[in-house]
Image 1 (tube, helix red, strand yellow):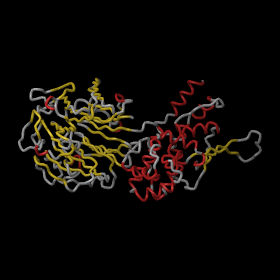
Image 2: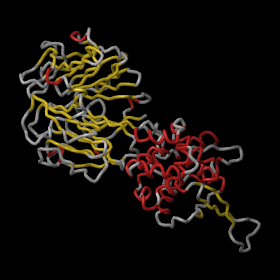
Image 3: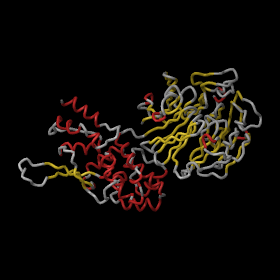
Image 4: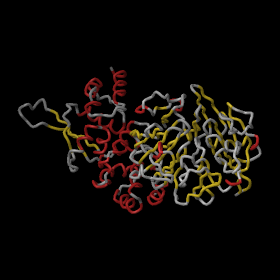
Amino acid sequence: MSIYGYGESACFIKKEFSLKKAFQPLTETKNQNIQDICTTNKSSVFQTTDGDLTEIIDDKQKQYSKNIQKIVCGAYHYLAIDESGKLYSWGKDAFEYGCLGFGKEVKEQEEMKLLEFFQNKQVVDIACGRFNSFAKVKIANDTFEWYGWGNNNYGNLGTIERGSKYDAIKLTNLQKVKRFYSCSCAHHFFAENLSGDLICWGRNEYAQLGNGNKNNLSKVHLHMEFTDIKTVEANYYSTYLLLKSGVLYMAGSKEFTFSDDTNFNSTKFQNQYILDCGLSDGTGCVLNSEGKFYIIQKNNISQIIEIELFSKNLKLFTGYKNAYYLSYLDSPISRDFFKMFKEKHFVDFKIGIYDCHKFIIKVRTNQNDVEKVKEYLESNFTENEILKFLNWCYSDKNSESEVFQSFWKHFGNIEYSKKRIEDVLSNLYQDEDSKDFSLKIPYNDEEDEEGGEEDEEEIRIHRFVLQARSGLFREMFTNVKKETNSVTDYSQKSIETMELLTKYFYTDKIELTADDDPEMVLQELSDAKEYYQLDSYSSLPTILQKIKQSYL
């Protein structure tokens, strides 16, 4: 798993990085199974699936092993709860609003510290605003109470009485809150109530509550018009509201929403299916179903910058000054296949989507009869859901999404669906019966030089593998008829070398046998990356260098 970051935090990404190189891999988290990320103005905290925390401040790290179940943050402070319901707080009370919960005198708490007020209580949920904190306490089996502390200048705590609260108070007006949506850099809040409805309150000077006016709210406002909400993200100025249907609504400052409307509007991305979104203090982030990542900058003139991603299997996190995403795809093979999958002509329903993808569908679902898969998908799934299904077919992510539950219930065999893309392609390489294309390799018989026809040897391969791995073939297939099932390769490489190369297209490996001539292989493949237009991240040059070191 790789983590990439973008933003202003000095511990990872410097301000002088150009936008084209803005997303950089975070080496500090390599080989960790990251479950959640929180980032404030001063540091970032990574939570592993084991419940351990790593806090990174500049070049220093702090480790906490407390079986943490959830972590949230504000602009400068963190809250965390462990598996027993104990509540911890640390960070900085930058503007002395009391967000840490340790009283008026404590301005900073460098290490995780237990909040004594909750020591004999079981905390089951937490949330943070920009400068305030919330905790949900279990009283009985089905009875809970919300407490809050910190800044209340805009009705942040849902109380009419303004002013900061340095100790936790019971929030009478918020007892019907079931859970909070993301609000770590905001003075306004969105939550789901016990009836499943969307409610909001707090600061509204930029119309960020989307309720038709710019009046701050101490009492909750009910947004009855929205159902099936996937996520809500908020920053100081604005709110993004994403529905499960892929529709993105925006409210608030024009710098982030491109509109002066005081209600939520969905005009900016109305023709796109949005997978995820986020808001940090000065940046908006939107990821669509084509794998494009839009960065919306808070500048004099708002702008959208598109960053092409290899995968739609991303989990997006945003914090006070940063945006992060987790990538589940590290191998060059996976990147190649996602790049091919995103090619519009390749997934166009008009040219027969199942003909293009039938081999990968067959292996990934373990169903020999692709027509049955096709019939079931078209009868039970929308076009966008089918594209999600195909996205999964080319990925190494487990199929635990709700989209696939009915599919696996119908077909069974969910165990096989967890195989990684490398295993899938290795199986396809062995499956000679399903290979639908031939590379013909010409050679001259030295004993017959009297004008005889040139002989050819044949290598069987899957058309879509050539499309994924080679820009040369990808371009060729866009200009030839679909019925074309072979092509002659005039690169003047031997049949032995071409067999190694085609296996590399499936496995990302070149494995020499005792019969192979290492010197010839190196010589013939020295220009393969350029000739076959392999992508910049291709591992072939590295592999050839290792062969040279090992054999010559």
